[in-house]
Length: 216
Image (cartoon, rainbow, N blue to C red; front, top):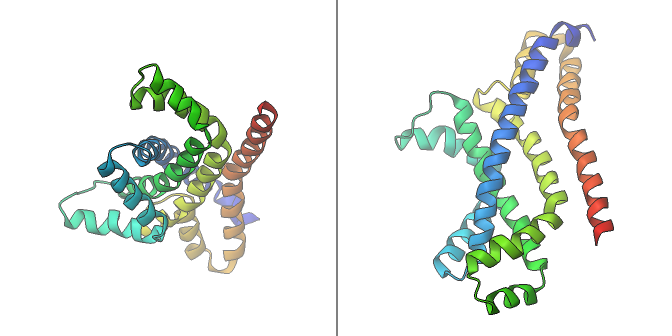
């Protein structure tokens, strides 16, 4: 345990950086994913097609490919990043948004179609029906799976450590290289700090799921 205690400042710094990556990427992914879900059920064929292709491609592509594209391909296309964290946020946000879009779309499909028809019968447009009638009900039912997706996002942020981003896993790799005879202890420390982030989110997801079930 000495190596963990001695490197607590590095663990804490890694925890904060992982939290930063996860929060920023999560907010962007929630916004983009909701827009993609709205496009997926849109009456405009071009929007439906774009959203479908985006979701299917990203959901069936390894996260590492998304990181390679953001960190290597985009700079070659002229998109320069002063910090690798920005590329990591782009990769995490784009990848997670696809899963959020699919979760929100399933929530939209769970809302009785009669409510949308009733709203349209009184003259409401598609955007009004979606934002005022459908999405509020859909988002309530998909909060638990959305939290699970965000938990996966926290764990997926560890991939950023392989692309020279110093988050929790990145610091853990540095500590493991510096303490070759105590690698197991270093990795256990990394796992413990990840649990500090994911376990509370898991408890929150279970609590919300129970409340939603009772409300139904």
